[in-house]
Image 1 (tube, rainbow, N blue to C red):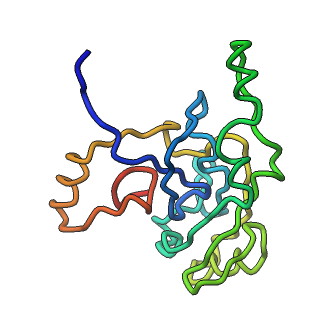
Image 2: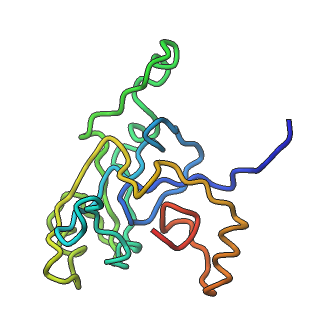
Image 3: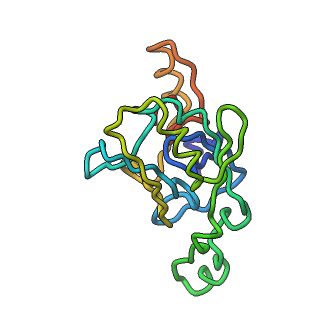
Length: 177
């Protein structure tokens, strides 16, 4: 067997377009990384096929740090061992057990569904962006549920616009969302 690569880091992004969290291990299934992008903000100004508010429209989203309230419930499916024995798909935790708190850029911690957080996220946006919070048991991704991105590619892309790589900020290993 020959080695074709090495995993440098694993990242999960509980809220679409907010900072990610580095993981020591991750469960990857059909719908992607368990606990990834379970929350997103829907914007009335976004296209129907891609209704999410992203850091393309609100760069400040990248400064927010979400954390699962119950990290053990968000680590892996609740019946993983039993499902593996049966050859079945594992179950996700109840949505109430996958709630997220968000550290704001000014250091406050708010629940993901706190209206004050929604107001902060909305600050500076055009009025056409009416926001609602979305929650799902499956990742709300742009395209595919898992991105594998080489450090060589990230370095090359960082050199072109002279922008440093920041793994915490997006679904890739770079500065994009």
